[in-house]
Length: 146
Image 1 (cartoon, one colour):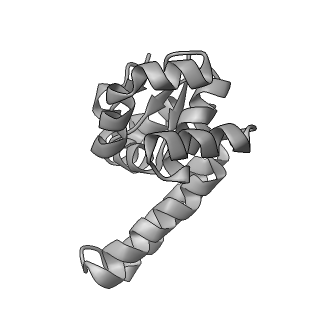
Image 2 (cartoon, helix red, strand yellow):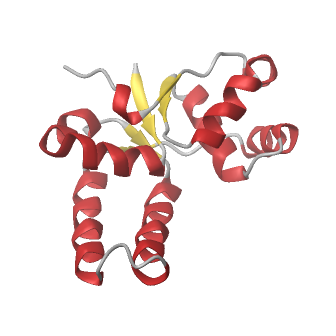
Image 3 (tube, one colour):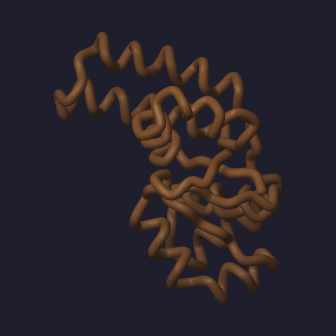
């Protein structure tokens, strides 16, 4: 089964697994918006939270560019279903996009977003009914890889 990484899990996978991250991420999935979510997180960490220097953020952005070249972009194909799910579960369209893309690509959703994980776990029946399949979730620190 392929893996679909949200922004939080992609960053954490790079941090946790360092050199092994390439093996984990290669040919697995992201959404096109993931790049922008991570870019915004780096901006926030640098400018607002002062946790990173601009040099550290630029280095991370450069590494991100390399990582994204080995991954596959798999955006959701059904915008109406994505909006319906976002509305029904009272979540952002962004989060619903990850769920729908996961279902459409028969991929396990890798997320470290506690709020998203809780929302999926609490609404399994609704999601199954709307998407016709169960969404499998894992945090980045529980990824099984060869």
